[in-house]
Length: 365
View: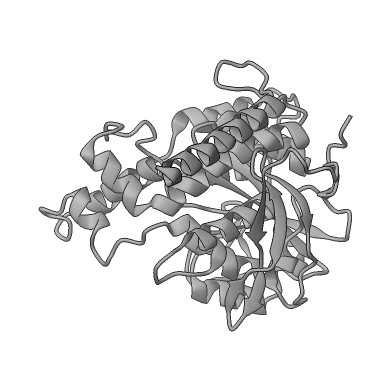
């Protein structure tokens, strides 16, 4: 049986029948992440082999690899990369009230290393706040159990190679997330959004397209390519425990198991967790969405968030894979039937072979 925390080299070396892809990984240069190379199994999301990070100053080295045992290489602190409109408010409430986990959030002015309503009064949700938090050695202070921030790159700078972060996130469907964010902004700024439809907004300069991919690779502006989303996929697969917003209970149960969190009630009923999930705070609305799948509006939103869509579908595969490799869940399809990856690989190879022969035939006509 595969170890719960199997190494990245567990996959057999015989790759004759695998679809391999060379993925670009990470290198830090002039404040941006540039790639190294990694061999990756396209079918399962498995990292088969990878080169060591060439630059020890690369901030990604501040984060533990998700498939290594927690605390196996020294002190660690959980890091919640909070994507807006992804049930993040629910996750924070559950961590604070159901598991008594200490986290930082600015609750009042001025900031201070004191607790207000069970939360350390330190800002980790703005760039200025993160810089101040870094200056206080927040992670090494032992005052928090979880760092929560919507700034992935700057957030991981709070950690260091001797006190690493162990990161998780909840990924929303990009269309529903964009719709929910639009509705929230429209409610908060009615004058600014008067007469501005979601179609207008997502095509304006004020809209940040493909926000998750851009955050992971620290590339906030400029045109994205497949190479960028490839780097984001590798970061996600190597560093993150992935949760999916549309599967909140399963996602939270995995986090509890992975991090070894102890429920305040001590009875293992998860009643507190159910309470906050059913309550659903104002920040996290519209998960079913009002936009009809396949409509012109839907197609527009998937188009402007093309790379976040690609990353989301990859995350769904990774969610299934981690269920098996980290949590002992079987690989299953939507009907609950076990997935036969060998069969899928054979089908893909057959399709590629047919496409190759068809191209030869067409070329000879």
